[in-house]
Length: 241
Image 1 (cartoon, helix red, strand yellow):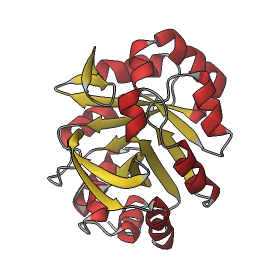
Image 2 (cartoon, rainbow, N blue to C red):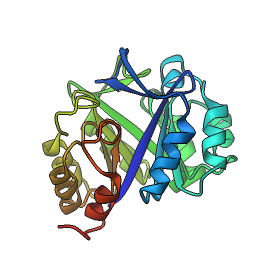
Image 3 (tube, helix red, strand yellow):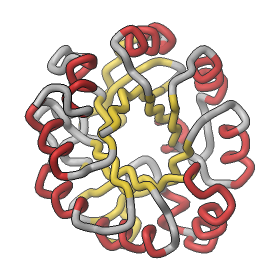
Image 4 (cartoon, helix red, strand yellow):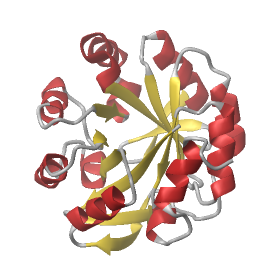
């Protein structure tokens, strides 16, 4: 299983939200490059970046910061937040981003999603953000009108290879992730699931690994010191049982 330490950006700063609430923002570093260096020193091989301003506004807002992060790192990097056009996909891929995560646009425009998957294949992931069982859109502020698990299956049927699934009710809460949801997702054939939202304990990483979950995003638990990134990676790789 691949561990993706996360950098969430607002106004160029590395922050974390509580359950997706923009009013409950905690700034962890005014210089995200410092966070990236800490991740690299801990042995990270992958990175997950979210442009929170972009997710809320509908277009990228932290592009230059992301450009700086990507250019200073050889980590496999996936980026999401406000990506709703082919031009925006191209702009990130041209930086060397390994995968672009589409959320709102994937829910609202199946034709666009199908075209993007056909053109970019494994470089596209769909962000499925579950709120009360339904896929949330526009920075998690609204419901997309489709059940989250159904959206995962729809993405699979359209040829999508990767889904980043977040349970919003657990995200940033430091109270554990929704293992039941990921167990159900692990039983959907033909798609790689990256787990996101509230991963706080080593036992959860081991459980996700043993389910066959492909990747796991860890954010606030790293910033708060509840999890050690080096150990998390070793657990994910099966070096620590």
